[in-house]
Length: 304
Length: 304
Image (cartoon, rainbow over all chains, first blue to last red; front, side, top):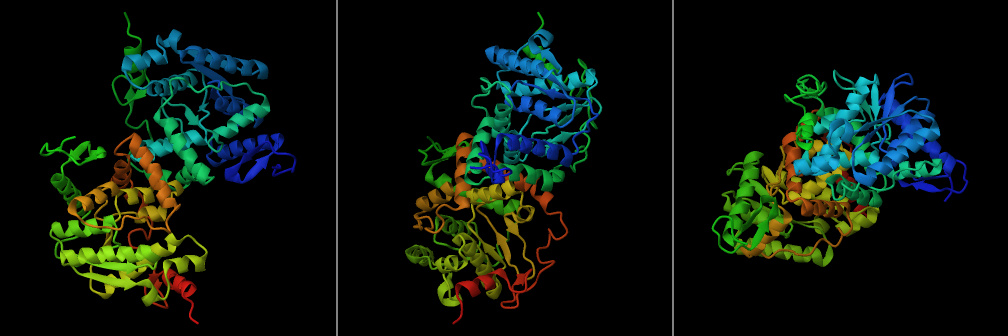
């Protein structure tokens, strides 16, 4: 197996591109894919104030690293979810990266600042923890960006993540979610822009990128995610990809190129803020009197 | 396990309906699903001249039986594909059903009338046989209906078939195929109406229907289909259905209810005949000078 570019011994093959790469040209490949995603979807400009949502895992650390190399100047923000040792280790990886690369990492802690943890939220709501986790991340990272003058929140969602979400949305034909499934969600009143620059890289690639670049990351899967539907959809797509390399990329990018705009044509499809009021508790945009995050907080961290 | 309707011992459960049925009420369930499909999609009226495409398998024989019970008067047409013993056995099942139920079965034979068989077509084109088979069925059954004064060709495509086709179309976001994926394709110049009244019944249900009604059908899978993509997509959907009963029905009917019309809005989406000419050989509608079937025939049955 030889590098497609220089014919040196290759260390990784990317079957959907029918190519293998040496370490240096694999890094170039990753940069090219991120550059292309940013360009194709007009994600941002070098002067934008960008904050990367850093979990300490392979995707968010690779994203941070790649954006700096591509000439952007992102800071990072870590949200402590209170999931025992898993969260402690994740935070250590995020801090170590920031220290070693001399970049700025902000930290938010769910327990100390909001009075609850994800395990507590799952117990209080009697529901799978992933819903409360996603809601908390979206809400608090958005609020952080707005409060600290960032234009854009960049997240490490990769090709595998987005294809799995798309599969779930398509199996249910959830047209609202399909309308919002895009690597760029533009800014709107109460919303920072959200971008997903890794949408052209698989999770195997972001892991290999970290290994090649010497970035230590949280290797464990979140212990609370075991058995969730999203991981199951990833398995399904992996079996399809195994049989026919390129399936995931064709599925996701075919949707973005040929179908997404067919789901944004309903009256409020283009402007998610059009029919939104303000949360009576926190002021965030919401369709209800009190937003979903504040309602979660009341249940997960009841005041005495 | 007791019948949902009468509490007698049940012989089959339908997990997506969270119900089990005794033999009589299972037959009623099947009729209700077909009646509902015909009604919801405005497939036909009792006075229409309908011909069922009868393969000798469970789906087409169940369909024929159900349509007669629901007050329609369909004839059947069997297309001999020349796939050795499999085709011979299939024809026997179709003929036996017609004789026993005193209904009219027409027969077309690919080898004697068109000069080739599906195995010969696969060998001549060096491609998977299923493409040539589907093309031949669509072309010859449509021509048969037009030549013999039938308004409508009814086919036994069931929920599993249609969901698998939809999965393939969605994985590639093939927007032309998505526009045409519907249980009713209206008649147009050169095209009889095509309907799929089993679109609300799974293949396990059509098999059980045949067993309960004492209908002998071709049990074997087509020997030429082994390993094809369609069967693989069925497997994928079966694993999803196993985990979450109702997935297939939600996927297919969600598409029809909420997404299909988003794919028919291109200029020629509503009228497939709008940009069609006539085949120089056979006169069928086509976008090329000679239609795909006639081109297949030239390759598969070259004249000396």
